[in-house]
Image (cartoon, rainbow, N blue to C red; front, side, top):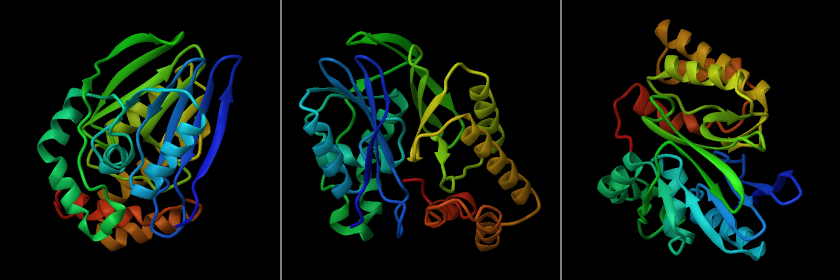
Length: 271
């Protein structure tokens, strides 16, 4: 399988932010996971999708030679939590209560739904143990802000922010350089991104693709606006996909259309 990309995206005197991105090539969708490295420990955001990349992400974290204090799962889409079962079952994991409930109830269905991926899918489901609610908390001297965002790319989404560093872990609220996974909530999603443009954050770490700035947030707004207009004009399925690919030829990972089109237009299961 193609190699992932790992890089340090921000460094202060005692904090380093790492991003680990699965490949953009073939049918991969460039899953991005992140590490906040402080003096004494590591905090992770999401766990990768496919087993080889979850193992590679764990190996990268272990090479930092600090304990993993916790891992935050941003939302219930399997490409963000499948890696728990592959490589992070021994790590305390946190998620929104709605995400925990979904994985408890439907986690095995979601895993079974991906049977075509064979041994790229973990052989067990690990449910996040700790609920997280909108709040502020200091972890190893770093101030974190946790927010619950509804009705965007997913029904319930956790964002993790480091306000003193100007860093926002948007995960799937922003797709950086890749095609977006679309839902029925495009209007509200646009409003959420518009709010990000006036917040005091400069670095946005997505769930897919490389680290981004406000220019990419604005480009996501434009993409969502174009998609909403296309749907309003009656485009569906293959015609919709072809329109979006032709309009945004620079965006990578067109394989994501095969994942979400049956859900957006055909009512397929959201596991």
